[in-house]
Amino acid sequence: MQVEGLLMACHYYPPCPEPARVVGGLEHTDPSLFTVLAQDGVGGLQVRLRDGRWADVPPEPGALLVNIGDVLKVRCPVVSNDEYESVEHRVVIKSCEDARVSIALFFNPAKRQESDLFGPLPELLTAGKQQRYRAFTLTEFMSSRREHGHGTKSIDQFRIAHE
Ligand SMILES: O=C(O)CCC(=O)C(=O)O
Ligand SMILES: [Fe+2]
Image 1: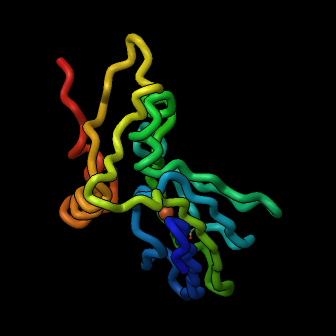
Image 2: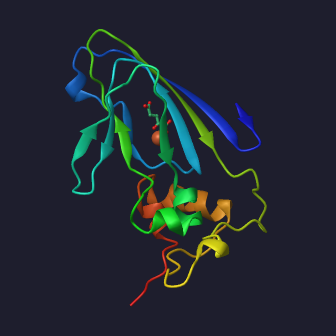
């Protein structure tokens, strides 16, 4: 389903007799502004910590998870000054018996013309805050993801090198 930038993805992860030998969902960051995720009680979602280790995100009944996506990280220098990140996440299979279901709602920019540029919002680039990313179009961003993968490397292509 896609409605002006809103995209819903429903995931079904079948149970597996040998969970340790399969991948549920490969590691990636979301290309959205932000994502709202509902997961059932089976578990399996993991996020990568700053030290590189993977940590479980245990399901909380009734809770929705909000993930910062790559576009918001770039757009708002307030939250991208290495304080908040578009976190890398993946799904591992936890159960031999239970299938897992999750629903992700991606809030994407609706504007996708070549004239629509996504860079740090000028009003948020306050004094002393360096611009970390150059502006890009969504076409550029998505082709960078195809070329460099769905991890953090694709957004790094737009990073401005500061001495
Ligand atoms: O199934 C999940 O919990 C995660 C799904 C996900 O990361 C995604 O759709 O981008
Ligand atoms: Fe994701």
